[in-house]
Length: 389
Image: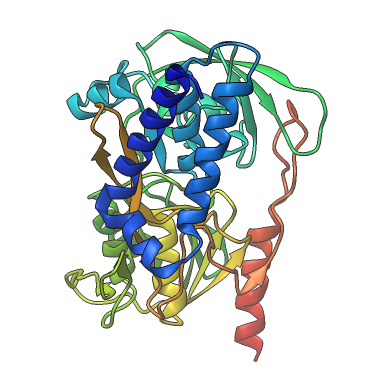
């Protein structure tokens, strides 16, 4: 091997060792798995082959950038490799602007929509959970992390971002223009959905969600509601633990969720009493756009048998990430903690399984939403069946 090849192997090996040292992650893996050294040896062989056989001189920075992205991509969608510039930006909490589109993102080959926030530019454009964003302003998202995607969607209010969107199994993409705007906090809303049945829409979770639920529930009871349907479909917004205080309104005692950090005992999440439980019978409406705080909320009610979950399996995004610096100024945004249901079941990358499965109707791109709501209808029917029984 020539001198350049040796330098490449040395540099790659140093980077791998640095990665292995992060949080003791790879050290523990080596103790648990005897084939880890073999895998590193194979990686070393690949680098040697590239450095000695590739038709042109190798751009080491480009190779390492791709290798680090590949390591992160092998984990969950929210884990990401950040280069030195991205790391500095992350640490400074610098935002591209206050304008937002209202899209919550995950990653599956390309960037993918988890949910479009109620009343946002994305919702008005008809974006739905599961839509693939193939490009942002003409830039392919094939190698774009969730962190990068969020930054590309944000910007100065009034500016336009252009998305190339693919829905379902359709072969044709659609070009969508969204005008960024400042998004204001969303409130809980309510209405009477059927005689004796109140409907609460929770579009997001925030510090004021619990008192808003109590207020809206009192209004519904005055209007004759003796049971509640709580809709958290398409709700993927708010810090994950903000879903627990609203759950405490309906679960008077007991553990609502657990935190599970690597190598630690699971830790119950303490949530104070919210002034006495609301005892009305409940149904929770969920879909594949239900994520994060909404999953903890629904999981707490389901786990304590306070409500049946009606609809689709939820997204499975209930974890936290931490920034771990690497010696060259780059970093890993690494998932280190995830949340469990009251029964100890995993939520992250699993989702909640509905008690009553109902598919959300698919909508062709550009078509208006259907006037029928089979998930809500099924919940109302389930109430009627329980009353008859």
